[in-house]
Image 1 (cartoon, one colour):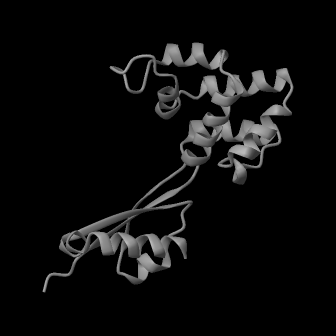
Image 2: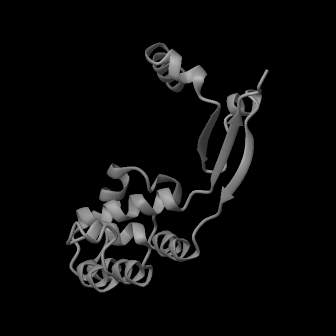
Length: 158
């Protein structure tokens, strides 16, 4: 319901742009396509699978008692991190240190000239990361760990 209201508002603001565009693309998270998109004639172009190195981190989180479906919740993640022992926290940092995904490295950028940072800086900063930074990385894991479906629509020329 909320999404439909946003779409309607955007349509009122830019009606000339909406109908003038010959193509549209959307991304459906967690392998779920919108039935509205399918009824509108959108077709599946590609599906992005889960990154293997990130799934190793997700498995480590699961082993520590995290519910993988709730990793996107900041409140849930911070409460679970607060209950971890120092040894469990080190195990989690070690799992993140082994997974050198560009999106994780971006969180520890020290120079604006290197948007995704250096691997050595990431590993060094990961060892001394605080709970807030680890919570943010865990939320990124939840985003990357989703299958994404890319849908494409093209206006029928009359």
